[in-house]
Length: 288
Figure 1 (cartoon, rainbow, N blue to C red):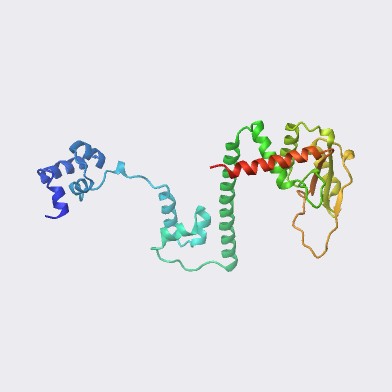
Figure 2 (cartoon, rainbow, N blue to C red; figure 1 turned 30 degrees about the horizontal axis):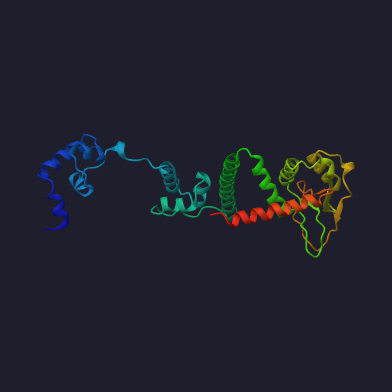
């Protein structure tokens, strides 16, 4: 006796069970409903009981891309190319190929210029879809942060400073608290951290570092507005000389150089920052 026959033998009157299962199937029962009705909990036997009987329409799950697939096939029958279908439906080339590869290939009826325009349109659509996915991911991540506790802001600020701030060297003992960055978001977080540490804004000194052929005055106004100060209180701007052999990419209206924020009488604060950072490193190393 085979293994399959042995399993069948556990159920008396197999043909009688099959008649009942087929009748239920034709009434529109799903496999799970037939299983519960007949108390048949062996999937192999259950499938043999209804073999040859199609599943009811209501149990068939619609596929999300069925409509797109049918549209793609219809366009292919009309003589459209992969590029045209891809651009019109906004789907990937691999999907188009999978859906229509059994249909006859249309005759080439477009010029190289038309082909390039179609390809460009398809690429622009892919970029749009990609940018939309990128935007959604960023928004979801931003919302996941929620509110920051004082301790969380404190720890973020220590890491931020140690990554972007000036640091003491054994051969150059300065112990200055100076932070440099071109990202306005980083500047805002750093200022919020200084406020948390109760560092008076009057102790802060600012100056801009920027290429000499950029909009220097515009950059100074931008950073002054961001930190809530007047440009007259800024120290002299540091101008970087332009090397004509270098092709700069940091140009345009969004280029505003870097802002330097230095805290006066900051030796004690610097020592505490370095100690805090060492504490974070030690705690991270001992975390399971």
